[in-house]
Image (cartoon, rainbow, N blue to C red; front, side):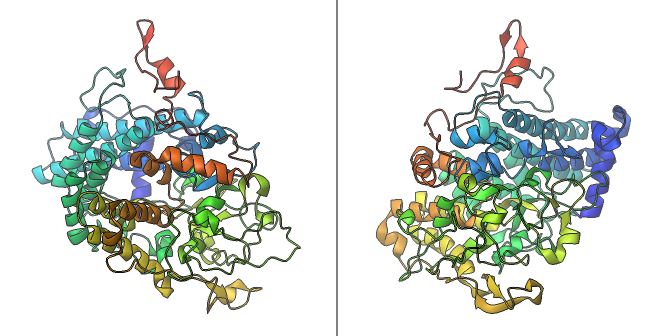
Length: 594
């Protein structure tokens, strides 16, 4: 949605319907009466509240889950990226220690992160259900409006349940007609998620009045994604065909890859042709703190001696993940199976006053938009200094996050310093077009054309290979404000797969190449753990990661992934305890956690 209208409406309806004590700094005021809500304006307000729940926030620095904001971050940086091997927890071992057992897969059901995430997602479900409940009672809504509003409500409910499903598998189903809310978690959610997404795909408008609202094509992309998680490739394929050929953003832009990779994380260039479904973030709009500025990721900035950020040193790209960006100097292609045999040079153990020369080998240019590394420009903040910006390099490694970090030149607008850690106006893409292309490539490799799968992967690689999207050295390393030169910041070499490569090497090779491309294109974006689980290779990949990464950093030396248990997280014990009825818990724990 347009941010000014979005923020004002969210504030109004959050205050009225959800009595946010933090924001108001006074006791709850209660709910409005049904006659005020059960009309077009009231339903629209409820719908905006359902969109507002996407960021996991209610106000100030508290998450909708009732815990800290990072417990319920919509980017899934803990549950998807750290647990998936994209990143180390970062900071030091004593800070946010509850993340360590999640990253190493020995956490129990009492971990506060699980309860915070569960509650935040069910808050989203409740808000979407209220939209549908009061829409059914509204009499001043036309048939066309009713379809569009209802489809948005069902799309959002499907999103929240999709997140619940991939986190915990078996969770209770609650809809707008539910009267008894203490429901068992023994329902297969996929048919219900698919029904909601089908309805949204059939009834949403192709364009919407506000940027942040879901449209028909976002629903199509999400529906195909739900099929992919169920391995229903024949159902997903025709939808991907249409979305790729005809899909547009909510503002009517034809779906396409941005010419420049980093435009996905530049607020001035957001809501572009690559934005399929995006959470709209906004900085400096809430006097009580950066409540709309992605508080869930406020810990995730380089922190230490000389850092321009006020906190906190978490979410450090892993050494294993960075090594994925090595390319073969002869072919410009990745090392699909033995990338760690060609490691990228690090500054582990190198002090700030010691000389260090960055890796001179060939690299995928997306690396330097994904990870901050010593000797390379860190946006326009200056040369990344290495160890001084890592709170404990031996624990979290040498690298810093980059996709979530705003630029110096726009810091006053895109950064939010309303509290002790930075907020940011950088949107979070739940689905972007590169994600769609790579999902479609995977689908083609499974049940379609290997040549078509390769063409989709090559579209993504071609964007990365275009020099316009590369990072360049500064004109003057001592004055980053002077701008960038025409000399690449590293030895970038990336090529597309040669004609007929996937077909010649077969399905397994095509899938391996596609999986690898998702790893590097979507690194640090919260997808990795869930991809590994749905591919059925989480035990292989993560245990290999623990072996390699644990030999260098101390944070994952206890790591062990057990297939059949760690595919899903434990149902929060607090929720099981609250579900007691007639002396027994209604909610049942996931296998292996009892």
